[in-house]
Every structure is written in C-alpha cells, then in structure tokens.
Length: 283
Length: 330
Image 1 (spheres, rainbow over the protein chains, first blue to last red):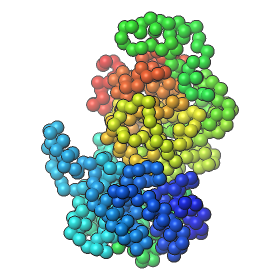
Image 2 (cartoon, rainbow over the protein chains, first blue to last red):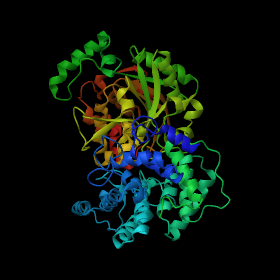
Image 3 (spheres, rainbow over the protein chains, first blue to last red):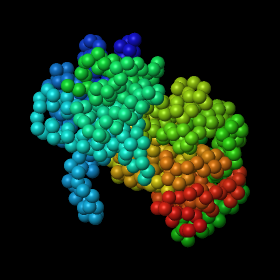
Image 4 (cartoon, one colour):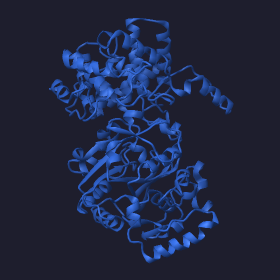
C-alpha cells in the first residue's frame, strides 16, 4: 500500500513533490530510499536520475530545481549508497558536508565576536546549518552526522571521525536541560527550551554508539514521548532514534495513526525495514 | 481588486478628506509625510471565543472591505507551538469565523495557510491547536506554506540583508492575503502582530526550521521586507486573549477582549500597540515601513472605527529589556 502511494505520487520527471506539484530534493530522497529498501529499483532509478541531474557544481544539492544554492538536503542525498547514487556524486556530497559548518563555528565569526568583546569560550563543537552562512541546528546536524557516520563505516578516516565528533559535541551542547532536543535552543526566548519528539528521535539516531548521562536522560525522554505521542512523523523518528540506541521496547507496537505526508509514508517504510534489521540510515 | 490600496481609497468621507487636507498642510513640518486619506482601522469588542465571534467578524469585514465577490482569499493564522492552557496561536474560532465571513461575502475561495518556524509537522501542530476540531474538512482547505511551490521575489525596496527572497506561490497568488495574527509581546521585536506574522510565509523548505536566515538578515528589517513584498494584504489581530510578558511562546495569557482589523497592516499593528500600551514609534519594524506608500503608524493618520483605543487599552506586561517602549514612558 505504501509502495503504491509512492508510485502514484512520482512526478513525470522522476522526482517527488512534498504534497503536489514540482519535485523537491527532500521527498525524492526519502522516496528513493524507501523504494530501494522495498526492491522497487526501477522507480527508484528514475528518482536517482532526477537527483544526479540536480547536483550543484560545489558538490551539494539545492532544495529544488530553480534554487541554485546547496543546502542541508545534501546530507540526505549523501545517505544514498554510492553504488546507487554514483561514486563520484556521492564523494562530492561528502566533501560538501566536510566543508560546511554553522556560521557560529567559523573563525571569522569568533574573531568578530572577540572584537565585539564577547569572550565566550570556544568549545570545539561544530554543527551544520539549514542554509549556508547561518547558524547550526539540531536537524541538519543530525542528518549530516548520519551521512558522515555511514561513510565512515564504509571508508574510515580520521578527518571523518573528527568532524563527526565535533557534530556530536554540538548536539550534546544543545540538549534541553531535562533531556531531549528541540530545534536547537537550550533556551528559547530567554526561558528553558522544551524538547520536541521528532528532533529528540533524530538526534538520538545521530548519537548512535555514543554513551553517557546525557544520552541516557534523552533516551528516557524519547521513551516518554513514544508512549504519549500521536504524530506519525515524530513516532517515525522516535523509533529510529531508540533503535539506534538499542532502546526501543521489544514489545512496542505503534498506535494506528494515518500517515499525512509522503515523507511520513517513506520514513515509515524505512522504520519497518530497520526494525527487520536492515541498516539503511546508518552503516 | 480588494487589495489594501483599493480598499483604502474607496469613497473617502468628508471627515477623511478634511483630515487629509490638514495632514497635507502639515507635511512640511518634517515629522512624517501625511497621506490624503488616513488608514482605517476597526476595533471591536469580542469578550470570548464563542459563537458571538462569527457575527462580530462578519460585521468587522463588512465595515472594512469592499467587494470580495469572486476573490481568492488566503487566511494566514499564527501557529507556532502548542502547549495546553496557553494562548500562543491564533484561536481556531477566529480563523473559522473569518473563513465563514469571507464566504458569506461572496469570496470564490477561502484557504488557510501557515508555515510554522519551529515545528516541521504543521498538520500535527494544527491538530493539537484545535483547528481540525473547529474547522470542518480543515485539511482540504489548508496549505503548508513551508512546503509550497515558491517564486523568487525582488522587493521594490529592501531593508534586510537577505540575498534571495523566495516566497510561496499560494500566498503570492492570492487576491487577498489576510494575516490573522495574535496580539502578543515579543522577546526580540517588542510586539508580534499582523506584520511579524508574515514570517510564516517564508518557506521552511528553502530556509529550514527555524527560518534562521531571517534572524541573520535582521528581524525587524525582514519584517519590513515581507510587508513590502505582499502588496495585497489585510490584517486581523486576535486580541480576545493575547499574550503578555515573555512572548511569543513563554508569556502569559492577557485578555484584551478585542479584534482589530484593517487594510493597512502597519496601521493595525500600531493601533494594537496602543491598545497594549506600547509606543508603536518605538517598534523598529513599524518605524522602518512608516512613510512607505499607504502605510501609516501615527495616530493622526489612522482613522479609528468602532471602539476607541482609550476604551479598550490595557497594559501588556513587558520584559525588562522592553519597558522603555511603554507608551507612558516615551
């Protein structure tokens, strides 16, 4: 049924829309990953062709045709194995991720802050932004870590490990005071920020293999969310995050919730395959 | 056409013409260039979120709008977060009342659209905020502006440092974009009303969640850019229960018992500020757009309809950083 929905929604150009209309990179990546996992190689191949044709010269991907700047969706495309995406395209996407960081971690920014009298310590963390020349946030950082970690499991390297570690440090710094993550603000408008279920699941997936008190607290938050949450998107990410941490309750069965978007459907298929033991989002 | 310029110029009264003539005579004083016709802003009392809001809204829109028959209307509420027992979002009854009122006035279509800045799952957020429960077949009428098709726009005048501004086609293509905002204080901007509400038109699919590019480009300046980018908008502010203190999320409910509306969003926001006992001339984004064509924020250039500001004004608590903008202090 889910496969049918994806097939019905595929545009003539091979990509997928968010809702309807023109193809966008994000829903196309999720649909391609889900269809590859389901063994639907032909429609997935058309989606891959759409993606390959839209890689920007700098190695990244724009969110859609007509927008000529690479942004966070590059991390999503880099989750597609090089065997399917193409080795060259994949390698350049990894290079793009390695060369990108939130503006607040750049030397120029630190220098400017220092000149302005800000003596905050430099922590050595570095996340990823949604759009270049802006700050880092939890979701793009988590997706970039997932992509680099997957690459590191294929072709381990010190530079990759260091960059992943910096990204994970960023996530731990941005954890909400009582555990879990929101969009990336420990304090929101001057008050203590509260976590969201979807970003908590996403960050826990990116922290796969990491341990410590902060991770443990956030696993508890995620399990609480899992019990009460009724959002399909959030439940998908919570399940992936808890599976990455080996903490999804074995007897867990999701509530009957309608998938409202194409991404929820695609991600739901990836969750099901991951539960069967297939490692799609991590290596 | 029911854009704000057309609405404002329709049948000015003798009083408006006299006010305009007086304004023109004072234009040389260097305070602010006066328009010939002041902006009309309606203030109506609405004590609670109940059935009475529907009739009040019909009356309000009839008073403010010209002919909307055959027009495509887009309602843009303020959906941010949902926390039970809070007043963060535009109340669904206010949105539904506007939805019904526009149809009763003969609009060809009325759609509801929003692109929240923090949460990606917009429909879940709308569901939690009571929109599915209040508005029949809500999903059929709703467009997620974060995921809509986009067009690059080139504002005639730009205040912010944003390099490329893309906006959703649904908002750009509407005959009338109606900002249905909440009356709230704002931690960074002082007050968030109908103009700040247009942040929700900036597509997350392009810029992410939060729309951090707007912060790096200047919050007040980006608000001004968006105001100028949409020339066909109308403003309704839900002040039945607003938010004071550390808004727009962490503040506390503040009943003001009013709906405020008009075709000049800056005039509506300036009026709301006065109701909140905030000096609109101390709100940076209002100052930026003041003097733009058809935009008025000074009292003498706004013609108040319905209740007077004095009759409904109630001081909204301000965080210490913004106490300087209190009307009595300035």
